[in-house]
Length: 316
Image (cartoon, rainbow, N blue to C red; front, side, top):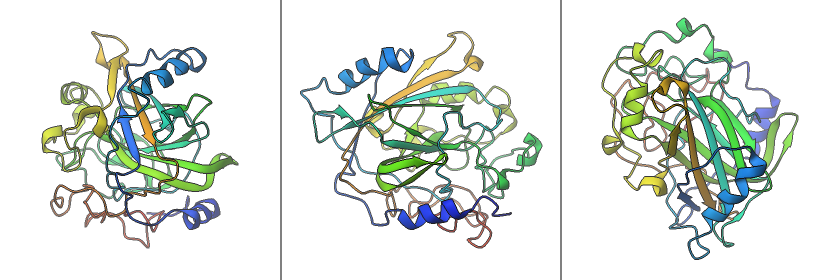
């Protein structure tokens, strides 16, 4: 593995990262919302109003989830994070509101996401076996150890809304289908990356089992065979629905899932909280040799070593 994309920007940003444990109550509330997915100008005001409609509060604050062992501090600000990766299209519309101030939008908040590809591989960590039987990552036509696919930031607009274009994630043993997420405030966009600020929340987004299992029968997902972990058996998802990160999903075409999905969720953050997800999570240790997100954030035995990793701080 090479470390070509561990440049001075990444190193500088790592020095600014917040390190500490979890904050009481985790600093985040999540509320599901069925978005119309119109252009930002027409839809986001309605989203912000919906998030604050329950007596001016943002539901119950939830605890954080583990950062996991596959984090890269690339800080790339971009809407489309696929880098040519194939899979079922997924559009995410995420709204950030202030849970301490009547669910008002948080413009300028930076939402960061990262997830595996259709076969369970993360860019930068392709020596980690996704479990079951999956094609070698190189068969997908890319050298992932030199790429940053399926990772990126977006900066919230005046209504607290960000939008990503990506693909439906695959799976890896022993985890269910998920997307990692961090919410940052106080930084700014600089030369195509997000610099400074602090992490208010670290968590994960989840997908309904019936939709995920249908997607996994399609190509290229179907080339990865094995036992998929459902939500009930996942070590991180706690069964709380939207308040635990379960996305609201809408099919682009009702009779053809290959056309893609639109997912939405509203985050109610405490902008004064600091929460990197370090040391949080739970649910047991992954089997030896699998690439699961250990509750302590420790990389699996077959993940790249710190000396070879693009980010020496990949573990939570």
